[in-house]
Length: 125
Ligand code: HEM
Image (cartoon, rainbow, N blue to C red):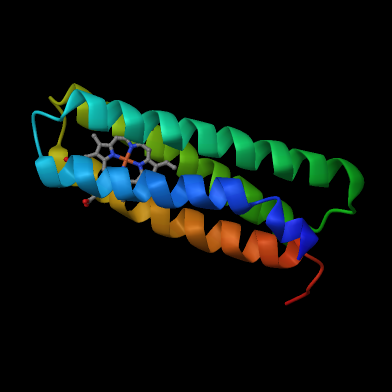
């Protein structure tokens, strides 16, 4: 429980990122600059906070292969989110495809991070 509490702030950040993402999307293109930047910056802060916690944990704990695979999957999802988000804001790309990536990556991220936290908190699948 104490371990999971370290992810409260990143968890709140993630929910805010989703909320602002839906808001940016709802307002539509051209994107509202303030909403877009708030969405992007909260996402960045959330990723940094979560990465710091995971790094601290990895320094001390014995690692499992599944855990490493899941953390890499979460990392790939984050890269896909930032890249697709940037491409969406630039425009001039295949909107449907890039938007699909931006919609699927959060699902992968939640799954990968959910199982990661489950394993890291000491429980075993
Ligand atoms: C953890 C990182 C992120 C998550 C979980 C996330 C999630 C979301 C979600 C759920 C939406 C709403 C999609 C919909 O209504 O179908 C959205 C929209 C959007 N996000 Fe993100 N996002 C993240 C990072 C970023 C970043 C870094 C950028 C910019 C560089 C960005 C740019 C956008 C844009 C432009 C939209 C509006 C897309 C549209 O409907 O046209 N996102 N995001």
